[in-house]
Length: 526
Image (tube, rainbow, N blue to C red; front, side, top):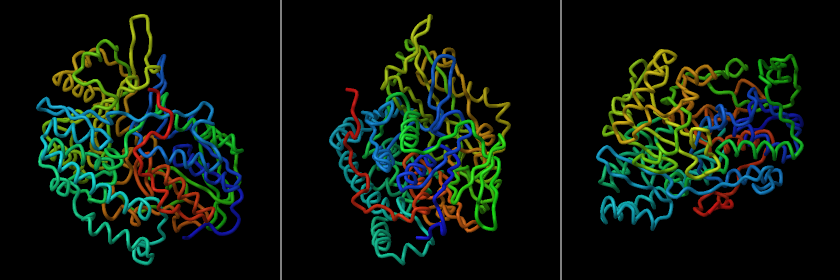
């Protein structure tokens, strides 16, 4: 593994998102003096928070899988979730999701195999339940072959896949499993009910690909989602960043908020100093840069032309609890599927200049107070709860729409769609305090206005994804969803660790550390 040569005693990490926090923890645990710079007034990055008039709400990712990776990052400095201030308490969601379909049917997703098999039998029949069990085994095989040698690893070259025995064995296993075929057709060999198949393929959107065209190796994502469990931290997803930041500063690290990095001074091929908007400079022997691929070139890091993943419109706000209590689904995460499916992906994930808005929307609704009642907001007019609505949409390369103009109108259309599907009162009573669109993501420096970064095409995945050790510098390492291993909360944490390993020279953990349990790893609230 190629590592930063020369002294690495002083490290600056730019960006206190999950990848930056993880990198800072692993570097601090390895004895480096680490300064972490964050432009916002709180840590978290894409897993941050928005402040409403009398409440806070998660600003980004709401789906947490593989919480063991949080344990690993904390353990790098001798901490546990219980020793953080405040303690980090994460609970497994049961069910993980609740899906509602255009025909009125609902299917709940459970991590426990027996419970899920019973749910499939109830909704789709015994034959589909047998197919589910076979599918679950296949997904587990994909995940086990992929995690240690393709996700939790640093690549110096695509040739690493054939040079190293462990990677050759993992590659052979993926080939035997059909991992380089297409995810949608492969899942279709196990499940005949198209509604059920959606629950094990929609995750391809996280990788920026329609299920029909995504590689089957991305079956690792639905395995994490549907077999290993979905979790939620007490207090919201931003509690993860708070815990990681507390562990970092308690271990002697320096975290500076409201500190925007404006430039990097180089001496030849080595970064020597990081400059900030307030005129300060921070000397460094090595640098971890977590800037999005859409803005990374301003820091002296070149990148090749990339195809971006689809984007999303996300509305955050509150609804009266008595209104939400009448909705057809009462769940933390509801996937509200439209009748169309393949057409939806064709609309939002098509080529440059050809994208369009979903004609039959499929949406993600998030109501965290159903899991954490402390998130309810008591107002004179009655109790309210935080609510988020996510609608996938094309990125700005695919459809350069004027989102500043059309955003509020499109949100109104989405709310009217939900009204027609039984979510009565949502159009009138959902108070929106923050609306994110591709234009707001672009203004934050994100590639083509998408929070999902570069799409996981074959040429942009695994060892072909943008390198975390770019050739343009000898001591700058990249972390975040735009580099290896890719998009998502678990992969962001892995990305920070892998970046730290480029500096410390530590190799990846052994295979027996692969997260694969389904048990509760933190104290539960019930």
